[in-house]
Length: 399
Image (tube, rainbow, N blue to C red; front, side, top):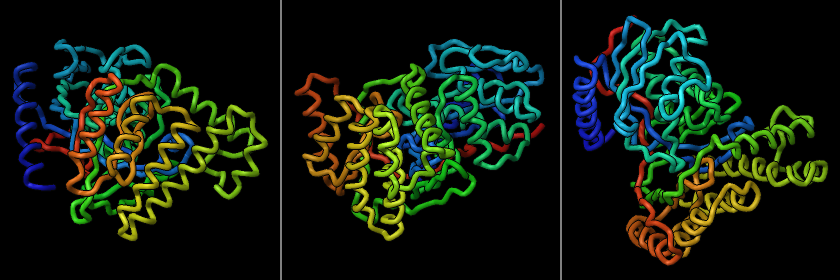
């Protein structure tokens, strides 16, 4: 971690702890951070037991937390409208906590349901992860709670198990049938690396070197400011279609269909399932190609892989939108080595791999294209691969 990032983390941790004191009286037991993520390649593959290559962002959700002995859970967010939500841990149930508070409450519920001896807490959140931008702000919220509770209550769970707990919170408590990629990235990523994830066996994840500075490259995130709600049924319908296709092919999951057998398998499927299967199978192949190129040190070769992934998401999976398509086209026309939408889709963000010194030109071209089309100006972020969830504040006690 650079000294600049360390200073920024320390400063934010102090601010979050100060606000906690004002809200709840007394100091927190500790402050934890969990990052958002961008997925370099491997979209909509995780819930098909497939492969992905995410990296953690410098942008994080910070959580100041202190245990309680009365079984009450008090939640406050700097971005949640100002009020404090108070709940009884023993009464938590799926679907019972609306809005943002359902994500942290769901993690406490999932831990208790799994048999872990957890109780109440006072929790105050602040975040620099843009919400609705496809950068996994929900996973950052969940994983901050998971790592904090792990330490506060002395659970000592491994990272992949904490990711599973956070995923279960989103699946069963909030009702979004996401895969495990976002949570694994938030918990398990390391700085200057991307996470080679096998969603079937996340415990076997590998870190792949992804240093940009030394290669004369930069990664630009273009937040289109088109928000999306993955709980609206579209995500669930895509997942159900993939599961139906796997069943028709007699496979445990689409991950088990090799790319070489795709031409033979597609004619056996109903027409509406063909593009879904084609995307998942070819996307898994793109992940493996990307990992091979990065391990060879050829980071620039990632560019065409990104662009091919976007075409598949746009034409086969159909989760792109006019704004993300425009951002990709404008970035490529301005000289980006590759670009694609990242995240679940229906809006959100685009990533662009650019040569150092071309960031302003690419960002400016996208902004101009948005203005010409009558869209709101996009938000532009230059990002580097960051560390996963971690404690920032003083050591917490255990129970």
